[in-house]
Image (cartoon, rainbow, N blue to C red):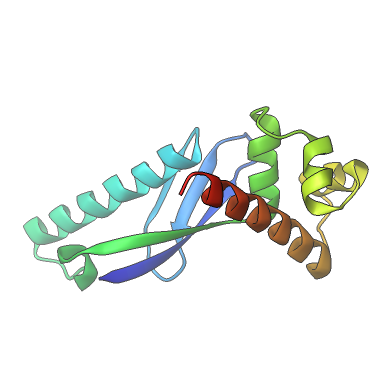
Length: 135
């Protein structure tokens, strides 16, 4: 099975876009899920159109493949805080980074690599805790 790497980003209007790192496919939607589904529809449409018109297309589209999504930290924080799922206070507890700094990262300040790693570790730790509880 082929694994396709895709990036999910939040646009300035609050919608999401997803695009493949190494292929031409992309999608957009109001949520991350909608954007991923849109990209999948685009991939299917591309394959069918290429077959009908006799164009070459990536061979993985004929077989089984999975898409591995990665979300940039800023988009992830904006999504969960904006949806009311997380608060800056909760994010501070998970990451160890103060709320004012987290707010700045969500609103245009680019985090240093070490800060990005702290945020990622915080999300991974939370994810691992949830996975253990619902395994």
